[in-house]
Length: 521
Image (cartoon, rainbow, N blue to C red; front, side, top):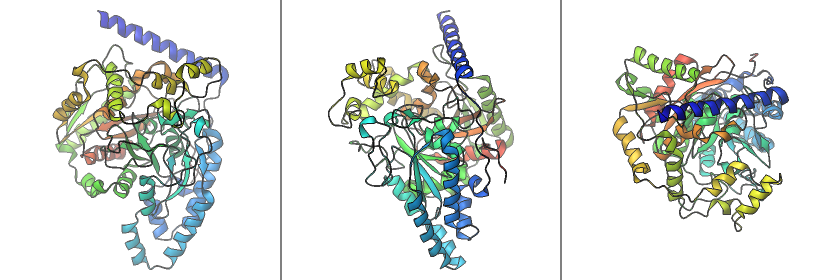
């Protein structure tokens, strides 16, 4: 009886919050601002296709870079995603690529393609990832104007694969919240509906990618920061096996613990194939991934599913997302013969954030505390003072960062909720031949600020950082209101090919990314 009452009160509270936000946007703000139409066919191509066009000399590298430059200049005043760029340097590098390829035979170009599969393809990265010469403030007032002195290792590896960085995009302060806004660069909006969030902390990448301002995005994920923006912006995103992609240079401060597992770097793309080529280019342990994805027999997989958090303290999954998830599972069963099994969570999902915080604090025990990061590691902020400034409208930090800093050292009381025990439960259930299909969030794109009033919504993403499991975010079309639907496919460490293979099958069936802009080519 108590759980029924709690569930009813939770639903009532969430309905009131949603109603308030909807009324605020109806009264004060626009929602549907159409992006400029897409008028260059290069903008909607995969990174692989762009690389092929460049090698075959169907398009010059310069023309590709110019196309994306024009697109960024057209959409950024609306979505506020790009915070710094290197267009002129990128064009110089593009001219060098063109000179190099023009001097080669077609056979030599194809050999170059095997060594540098992304030659000439532009890419962007979230601003907390180091791209030499570009902003690396991490949305922190105390780091305003600071530039990266070098490339992050993941950026360097993409360069070695031939890709050309063109810009960095907006993040929440220190990249530790699920909405991309800060006091330096403002708020990034969702291209499908500007009253909605694109997510975070890779929200600038998600918004720019789905707006066709970049074909390839570098993100990081410590609590859904790749998967949530990918879901909310209707693209694909992959949280790889922990340790596959180097974290070196992926935040403004160097990690003391370079072997941390709760956080990963990875791609957001508009196709599964681009996720794969990205990973093969930056992760030595992903060698042969494309072949493994292609050779995966989906019919032999155990497809576990769960369509919500099933806790009275948590938001019930919206019907449109439940229906999309069941449609996807039904397709995998009927078309491939995969075995469907309903999953049971090994914990009350309302407790997930506690376990996540415990694991993060354990991995960060040798790192300076967040209050030090908030002062650019030049001493520590005074939390009482910063809270008072915030309440007086003179804050130097955003609300979520202050909350996280205030609760950073809270201990986990229950051994039963140790992350290792929970991970073991997942691994034992999925084994080496299983995937788990679940929502990324229990609701479609929330209004800006709405997640502040119910943090438990992100628990469906946090749980797989806790358990160190790879996961692929998959778009499944749009709602009747034009907002992205989607889910995530989770698997066990080292078996990224399984979630990617299922994602590819769902892409073939449901069509993958849907442009928020009119396409006139």
